[in-house]
Amino acid sequence: MVHNFNAGPGILPQAVLEQAARAILNIDDTGLSILEIGHRTPLFEGILHKAVSLVKELMNLDADHEVLFLHGGASTQFMQVPMNLLNTNETAAYIDNGIWGSKAIKEAKLFGNVDVVASSADKNHTYITKTFSVPHNAKYLHYTTNNTVEGTQWQHIPESNGVSLVADMSSDIFSRELNFNAFDLIYAGAQKNMGAAGVNLLVVNKNILGKVDRKLPTIMDYRNHIANGSMLNTPPVFAIYVSMLTLQWLKDLGGVKVMEAINDEKASFFYDTLDSLPQFTGPVAREDRSKMNAVFVMKDPGLEKLFIDYCKSLNLYGIKGHRSVGGFRVSLYNALPLSSVQVVCDAMKAFASQHG
Ligand SMILES: *Cc1c(COP(=O)(O)O)cnc(C)c1O
Image (cartoon, rainbow, N blue to C red; front, side, top):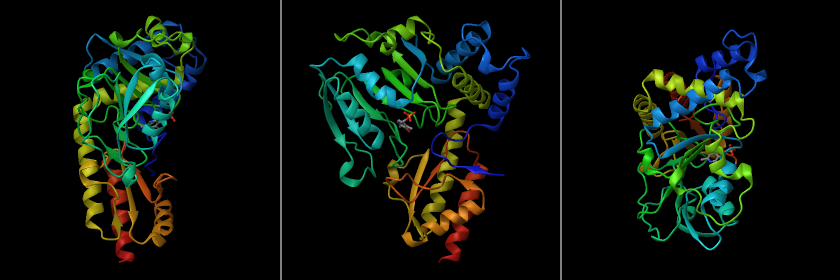
């Protein structure tokens, strides 16, 4: 029995893995592999259609919001978003709460002006910036809902002063209820909470498109993907299939609301344990703690390697913190069962009592 706390690609439901494994050999009793069927076959069109309708249902999207499955990870969206939305002489507002947001800012500057309206860089991104103002003439406000590396998470939708909201939800998509229709654009790489690496979910309000002057390469223009139903060219067939299975798993579980209650329970269990052990400490402001990626360190850094080794001996995988932050990170994604959280907490308690 292993416990998978990897930050990304991360844990997937066991039932999804089993079904995906079967489909690699023989999908739907066709005798063919999911890897060797045409993307324009009724079989794959059915899979894609189902994936799209599950997203619409689970996110409660209105008719203006289109759902696309695109190539490339979230990093591609760092440039594709401003390319589609921002004219050279216009300004977009960005919140810089961590590594991923900073990367998005860097790319946006290639296409127009960027106004960094808030940054938590002064405290190593260990908190969420809540007081700032967005100029009403900004083209959009971009932020990262959950900071995967730093372990912070927005607990509410930021006040955007009427400006269009754009969010990178790569690491907390489908983990909690939100008014998704409040966003004009949402993107998320699949490999944290939705499926296998290689596909990106994009939800876009179609009314915001077609307003930039620049010429867009065909494959970069969201409108072409909408017109072709995510089949402008060969889509990442297998990655979409795994996303569809994971979304179906989520729906069968009861949807995002039920998932949120489970995630709340897992996060409380973890953070309560963390706070009860003086040997461990979390650098993140309590109210901004992520329910998806819990970042923590040891008061005595000299013990960190020992703890990692101890976790390895217990088959706890992916505990090591991001190389830029150090310490530890426990990812509590949707597919991680509460029992795994209990196991890592027991390990922390046992380790703490040995090194009291
Ligand atoms: C992982 C991650 C990314 C990058 O995803 P890629 O698929 O590697 O491009 C971007 N944003 C957030 C919030 C992430 O967690």
